[in-house]
Image 1: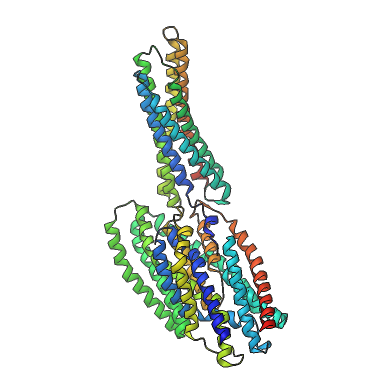
Image 2 (image 1 turned 60 degrees about the vertical axis):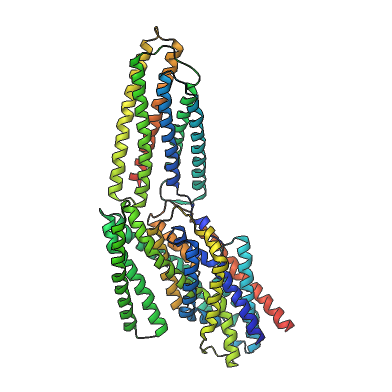
Length: 225
Length: 402
């Protein structure tokens, strides 16, 4: 009798793979936070770029593995589309993190006042917090599956999802404020630096936005079941 | 006598092949959910398969030996012995080919195909017990279905009585000894019913006593284990079921031995009966050593090769945890043991697939590939005609040259 189990099961749990991908995102976001602190203190940030790129490649491998499982498996507990969408949003999180790290190596901002610096760092911290919460949400999703959707675990997941939504709204508000502050300094700062920093801010907002998308998809999974 | 020795060697080889390949699928859930290591699985399976074969193997062996072909209609005892040998050769050859090509074929279906082939070529269409054969084929459909049904309800019970409760560990402390008790009850009840042949009420009482004992013994052990464990709630529940799954893995191998030993020794039993009685007596009793040959062959197959297969088949199926594994094992073993008591030769592996499906339907798995069911059904349509064809050819050759 041949091994039927390698055809019947995926051997690797898709949720464990998602959790790995989320963990790479968190590590990359943590590194990016350090990079931005160093950058705004005018320190060298080249070391962060390659490290984040390595994490991005590893996350990509996990995403491909996950996609393969869903291509092969015919019956799934969660909707395939939702799971693949979560994987792609996590991919966007780590890709954007990688892009920011690369951008930081391309240009140095000459003049930067403390107010802008403080606001960008606040945005960075919130971005990191949202990515951290995404990891918690994915980990909790494993508990939800393990408990076969017990009300207790679903409520806990809903609580985490609500928190991330509030943070993303604040990120949007803060990002617009930073943009206004930056453009109001177009005569004191170099215009390229204004656009450069505004671009970084927009990308940080995008990370939070993608994190919220992950949370929303998880919520759909929970309440669609 | 030469034919008996030759059939004994091939029967032993077939049993070896069952132990080397087939047992891995029966034990995969216990190994995959890390309840036991492949080495422990090999040790457990070697003993439990042997015991299952010797204690419960008679009914299915008799079905294969004399329940498919009307041997009395053939008339000539030598021809029947060649026929039984042909069926065994064909089934063994097909299982070997399928193993090489990685096809999920059943040894049970192979031997049934072999017996049909020999029957058709030796006596024509009239000497097959078609109604009995229809029952057997029906059991091939029913056994995965029953496995699925039992596993669905077992897993749903675990979900509602443990996983959805506010304190899953506290509930597991009560429910898991009940699971142990029910396992004890089923084994002892069926053992008394089939082997000791006592009155139904006596078998039932013995089963109930065994069940209560199982509950009473396991309860303090599990309570003591919980007291020592300070992991998260679900981890503790899974660890409790990991302990319980050691018992159900024994139950699975026991049932597997009971049903599958017949695939190896069924034709051998037929040859023995003819040699012993010198006539076509289907009522002759089977000596235990016939079943022992099969049981030993399976045990040797596991010990020498099967544990390596278990390593690749079952190890690290991360999707599979112990509450799911327990549900699959319990339902598979119960279905197979029930079929053994009824004398129905079924495929354990196909029953496992049914049980996995049941747990999947109860939302126990993230992803399961049920398209394998298609390849299993295809394998039925290939296995029976192929084994029948080879058995017919072997029969013609044997009767022509000897």
